[in-house]
Image (cartoon, rainbow, N blue to C red):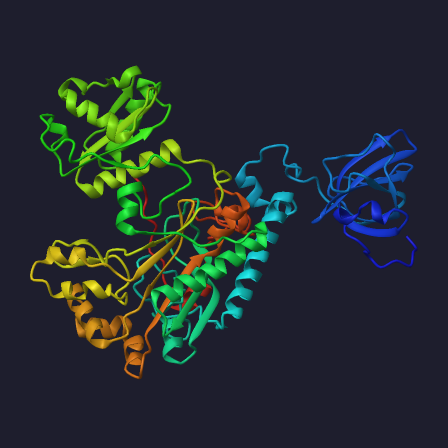
Length: 584
């Protein structure tokens, strides 16, 4: 092909009626070809911006996914042939010359998304899958989010600092991915689960306001919102309170949302951890729908029904679900038991407020009337009740609420929520010591510090922390806290957890040593970019917004990782593999 045009003058999806008459050069992949006899062919050319129809005089020998350069003149489509489903549907390319830049094998699946494709096939050929509109849209949306986050943090005076990927193993809750050292046989680096300790060191170093779009790695079971490796916006600030952190993270999140949707988030509401559990049975409540947990303990305080003689009785009202089949109710009961409940009581609401249930005969008329009034039940509704320890009631009803009411990710808009005042300890261990709910550098709530010296260990469970989570549509986006920077409080915390001075030095020595040289008050936060992008893209699984993800089993169908290591490499590292255990 001989022409004076550059390799590409325009993108396929950018042509509009204003371009009519222009001679252009387009490059992309052949999405579709239609031949009208021997003298006319229609070629749909696709790049990341979209598709445009190219009209070729004569036959053209091109196949699906061939890489083409087409030079032609933009013209209006003949009247009646416009395609309103395409942004370029009012125009086409005529007088076309086609150059084959590369041939292609037949693709392993259709790229027009009209056919559902098995995910394993998509991941095994991810380089082809990335050409689809869905993946192009998601990855470019992700890039806009990252750019907006960086701008927002820069504008607020934060400094981007890269922290190391090869670090010492530290106790952060999940298992580390470890890397053997060739120069120090028998010793290992760990890949960072987060930059937590290093960003605190930045505060000691006077960085004042740090941020990083950080890659983190955790060897834990995978699910829809979790991968081995993930990206998070990580931030820390000196001389900052919880209020300061919530403010600057809200600005960053709002900027990211506005970059995608064109609308700012506005003020993000807050809810205490205790209120979230009491109302929604979760510390990451999905507030897009109702079905809140209703307190019924007082109603049944004097009941004669043994199953309701429990520390806590709560219920949920499922509107319009009174016709739920008995087999479905049995299934819900089985689920409740698997989640830890002793059982599940169901009641159908009939006309006039009458309750139909296998246990109705064991309840007084006053209790039945009170149940209808307290729950606000109406004819056609379904009531589900659980009686047990309060934490277990929260857990079971919270899961049932999501099972029966949670809308698809694309419905209900973006409902952000700050959850604050988490407990500092989640339980007491067998040794009577408190079990931490967070890392041991989390500052107690100032109003609860005196409880750390309580004689009764149970009082420790009342201590709140200065920690906070950001929740979006029932997904935990991230967590943060005010850090302990004063040595006397840190020593009290270590003592409560049974961490000796020697153990603290072994686990956190380099951070504790740094704190001796003037650690400022500081606080921080980190949230998952993969999760935020998935929700902004309307995806239920973060794999759809990651270019090259792992499957739920942790494998990579594209590269076949994980793979064995050559014996010579193992010898270099001073490693020997144990025989694989055979399953029975």
